[in-house]
Image 1 (cartoon, rainbow, N blue to C red):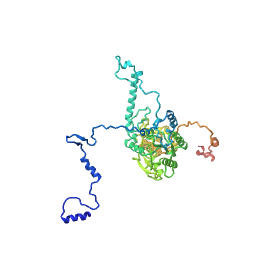
Image 2 (cartoon, helix red, strand yellow; image 1 turned 45 degrees about the horizontal axis):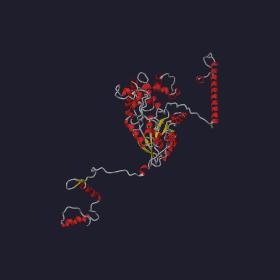
Image 3 (tube, one colour; image 1 turned 90 degrees about the vertical axis):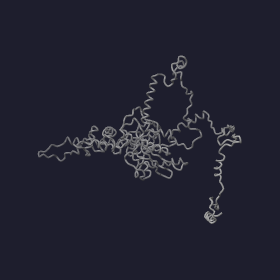
Image 4 (cartoon, helix red, strand yellow; image 1 turned 120 degrees about the vertical axis):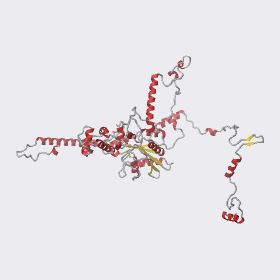
Length: 535
């Protein structure tokens, strides 16, 4: 044997033109195990028969004989069971009932005992249907039977009609909202009937956006729910929270109260305290150069990274209403513009991965709006869900906007005063800004759009007041002395301001009463107070 080129030349020289493999040094011309197995498949595929044609050995997997098989009586089959006594189970339920739903507790090591035992309750009675109480035996069976079927749902026709009407209402509401709700399942109706809304107010409810949300939830280990500090409960997606709590209980959920720079400090602190009862809450102000709460959020994410040491990295998903600042928070954490941001809703179209650290990844999600039949068009508009340039007749929402804002804030922002209703407010603002139509008529649509745009972008101060703190505090207050001193200083300063105001008022009134008469030559005295001094 030689190399292939040498062997081929030898054959040509000797005139050997037979077909066949060239025997080359180093090659194996024998059949390997795979080839032998493949060829045996054609040989031994059928049944083996004798001279009479009877089947001696059936083909593979075609034998009709029942095998005699039994389980080996070995103790190993029963060694993997766990038995718990009833008193131990009751003690376990009492000890773990509070910890199970505590959002501030993290499960580090799962016990072999199934956690479903916590939700099960011991029933003293078997759940049997009370048939005889609903309908007697003689009316159902026997010669005097009046029915062919047992009715256990209702005891009377009135109750049956009531149950039917309630089921019909629930079905209609579910059919209306189910296409946009997706897998969430819960529909927030609050006993209100769905009303016909403009198409633009259905933004954030398409199947594409809900699919993006499911991708983010499935891919995230920690879900951050971004809320607007001006209206935290209005921008809270309750159905999404219930879905995560039910379907993904192993995922962590935290709140980030963004735009806390647009509300007073006491309002942000009260909302953080109120929301912390449900989930951990962090106040945040998204800004690349001057942020607030960035260190606390990064430290919290690092704690989650330490908790999941068994994973190479963890993913943090940001969800929430449109225009709440999800992409701005990611840019703040990265200290540069990695996500496209804009003061209009719907800027983020698809989900995207951003690397924060070696073991922490961030996921940006488009804004979602859970369907709710109790939300009016004005509520959806004031939350920044829709773009104001697409809304028809925006002047109809100005009265509700004026009710949400204080009068002094509007006067300070637009430098106008003296209006009594929404029409006068629009007219005064239109004449001040010069937005007039033909015939010096005010441009109500343009002015209303500008006001609503300023309202959503934070130029007009407003916020939803937090709920009252009903917590009863016990114990000694260590800062009571400092609080008393501060209250005394504030009272003294207020009293001084009132005294100064009273003195100025008396001086002005005294100056008006002692105003000199006009002289004969038509000139007044130089000591007469001016209009500014009178004011």
